[in-house]
Length: 391
Length: 215
Image 1 (cartoon, rainbow over the protein chains, first blue to last red):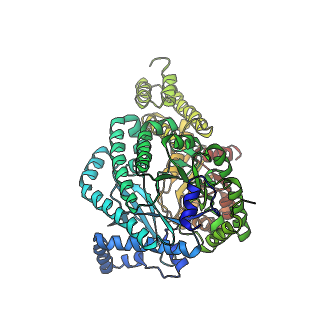
Image 2: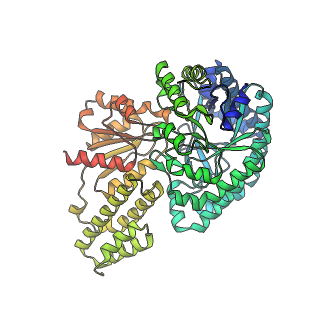
Image 3: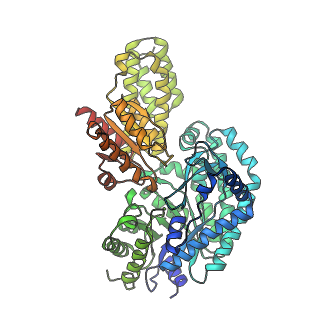
């Protein structure tokens, strides 16, 4: 079997020749280490007065941004191929570089939804980006923001389609480049407003909350349509619905506010005869049956540091959802020994791979993930993941 | 003030009814009765205790924990000016902040809301706090506990740096150190030699309550 047949067989709850391995490689630090490339010290350049402004102007050009962003993910695909992965995720984001006195380095990315992303850098100059705060903490600010950003959403959607098509065209013979339509309606509704403000609005201004969710759902459906232009059989969507000890909201409330959105997302993907895999960090046991009910075909992540046990998830919904992930990224692929990595791979295969329906992967990614350990993980999957499973 | 006002306040908090909670609190404020204010503050503390228990038992979720904290914050804003000095006596001081390079503060702020309502004095250093600022705050405020929040794996190393700095300045033994954040675990606490790890704000508060009681 080739990588694609292997992946799709597992997605079909059947046994492929061996357990497929999916990469979640996207951080420049990881990509550069694997490919032996020197990072571009963007943050360092931004600190220089004249050069900083020139870079800002350059990044304001949609063409330059699209090329730079594509280049990072093209590198991620090359890196994943080099390590032996069958698949890797890909997500497009449109950001505007903005001077920001609250930011660690004096600059932030502002995204079209109304979120601020903090920029940071490691010792080598590799850039890392993390959601830091909301820009639209009142109804009025949110209304004004989405009205002003309407053209930017259109640019973003055009770029999404072109980005995924190009990745599949240029790398599709060697790896399954799975497009991720992220973030989903949950994150896109609360993050631009802030979790505390959004929670207050749920109780105090439910009609406004409904309006925000409806807007973000429509946008997310269009994003999914754009991602599906790559014409792959599987598409990722997602929202971080969980935190360390459970869902961020009562499951009944998530159903009430977002159930219809998720059903529409899954339905749309199915209308295109594709499969829909949902990403969520955190402890999501209480939502697993909802995922089945909403029509998802698979889930990716199952964060062990949030208490997600692969065997338990398999027992609960493994016959209905394809499971992807669960290998720890807080210790195992950062500092774990080769023996520990092998043991974790064997355990994941033992817990979830029999009969198909499991794709081995880390639970997430971050810049401190060590490529050597990722390679150990892939090698162990190849060694112990042959069907029939014998570990 | 009607006889059942305090019970109404507590019930409103547990029903997450902001309007009813503020109405009951305003009745207390209008009464100008110092014992009633103390009873109302106790009711807030008790209600948040119930909320925390419900959260830990999986009966309530983060959004409910957050909103209950918001209701408590507004109620306390009305009551605080009327509180007698002895009623606001602290169970101990907690210095808290998010480590350098990290700007996340949701968990930290939930903790602060609940800790203040539980009678702790909290010094909030904010986000992206440099090592030296943590150390000087410990020196200045002589807290019962130092809390460090850290969401990002990439900033985890800052936790160890702060603890090393406390050792270097000879003040590590004067303070208990507790860490919390999505990427952290018991293993991290052991690695950086912190005294405790809290998986959520309420667990953190429970730990600090025990430390306060054991003083």
